[in-house]
Amino acid sequence: MKSILLSLLISPALLLCSCQINVNGNNDDNTEQNTTDNTSDNTSDNTSEETQQGGEYNAEYEDYTRIPIQSQVTEVQPMTGIILWSSSGNTSKSWVTMEYSYMKYNDVCNEKGKYDWTAMDNLLKKVSGRGHQAVVRFCYVYPGSFNSVPAYIKNESGYQATTYNSEDGRAEYPDWRSEELKSFHMEFHRLFAQRYDDDPRLAFVETGFGHWGEYHVYGGRFIAGQTFPSKEFQSQFLSAMDGWFKKTPWMISIDAADSYYSPFSQEPELLKNKFGNFDDSFMCSDHDGYNKECWEFFGKERYKVAPLGGEFSYYTSSDQKHCLDKEGMHGRVFEDEVAKFHMTFIIGNDQPGKQTDARIKEAAMSMGYRFQVDGFRIKEGVGAVVNISNVGVAPIYRDAYVAVDGKRGNYSLRNLMPGENVWIKIDLPEVSEKSVVSIECDHLVSGQKIQFQTKD
Image 1 (tube, rainbow, N blue to C red):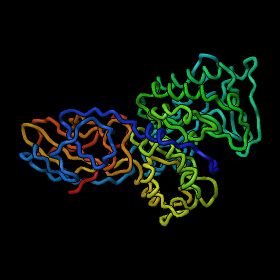
Image 2 (cartoon, one colour):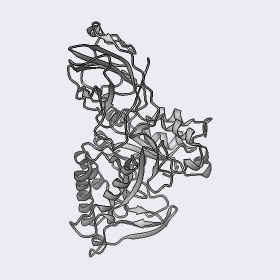
Image 3 (cartoon, rainbow, N blue to C red):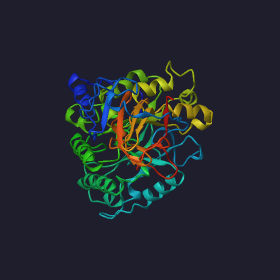
Image 4 (cartoon, rainbow, N blue to C red):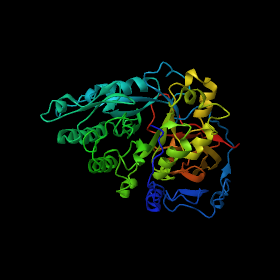
């Protein structure tokens, strides 16, 4: 993303629209929630007056026996942290949980109606084989490298690509006047979601248009409706994505805040779609200017709906070298910025050569969710209650459940926002003081585990 200060129209109506997006909870009568953030209304009405803030007292459970337990979060948690490109030689690092990859459309389709997902399958097999999950972004234009429009579309009568020497490198732009290209783009993502939406090897999907799919054409050849899709088509596509990807969180660049490229300013209703954002120049010198404006355009509470991520700035070699310095860079410390923007992950492919593993792990553990069990009580012949908080900076974006001896509660922890606390009751007559508390999630690959810390 280029650091150019643009004049963005950020109206109160747009911010209100984005801040009213809610996560639908699936709580039941066995859940009582204590919310420490009064701005959050992401769950259904499950707040109990008997639940005290930050404590484990609840009058309903006075006759339950408190069982001391001890646990620590010792590793970067699944679906969070500082991630590497799948082609990196450092993916065996213990702090890696996810791997990133650009993907080419023409690696999947070159003949109309014929899709071969081998390239995607191979990536997921390779990444999951290392005990990690994938973050992928299909893109058409990678300046200086490739254009991935399928061959059958390029060979279509009347199709005319535009080649230009942009400041990012020589780029071949798709011809978005092509009805076949637009039809393919819609069909591709529908089939993509149909095949992988429930695949635990896939963590998040990024999407977009322009250079690298980052919603810009810096120093390039921008022609609306020709080298860049029309706002009308973008609106159609962005709305459809919510219907296609029902489980996998999807994200677009913060550069889409710019009305020069995107339709959001003209169609604020699009902000209700449940997408996250990525920032590909995180920690740059101008981050408090252009980048912050873009983040705020999409709403300060978007993290409650979908993940926020990005990549460390490459504007200067100094950015990569110092972005994780303990004392900070450009007057900002990484962990503080993570908390401010509720970041779940960031691409830091060059960091193994800039920082120690200990420092990278420390920084990575500041990202995303972190669960803390504040109390565990049992009543033999009846069951258990667990008091749990999210002391991280973001929610978990897949369903996860507190379990006692393998018996899950009914409350999904994806509804538990940072700063919130919830009681979860589990009917388990055979419960005992030796019962084991755990957090279970079906969207993990072999070797992954969600940890929790305790106050005991």
